[in-house]
Length: 93
Image (cartoon, rainbow, N blue to C red; front, side, top):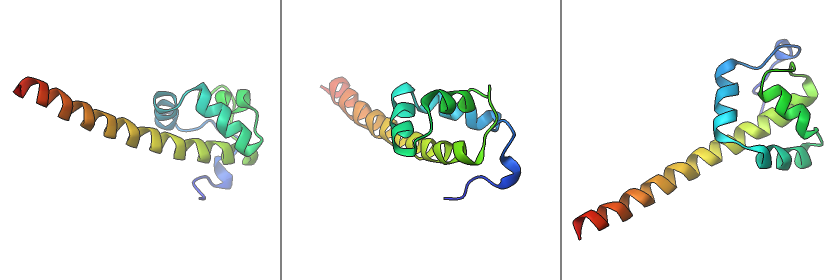
């Protein structure tokens, strides 16, 4: 995955990306990504919260965190569909 380019390094991540990552990942996700990538959890958090600029090194962790956020979104959709079915059955009873 090559989401980021050289010109992205030394800059803050896009504000929309920051919002999505804050909304759809948590500290546990950042900790797992840290273990997978070898990038410190505080570095990942600082990039996500836009207090530090992204580097070539931290971009690998952010790319991985994006994939985690996508999976979390998919899980939330599945959970919502299951809840909708269950609630519809309760109302129909």
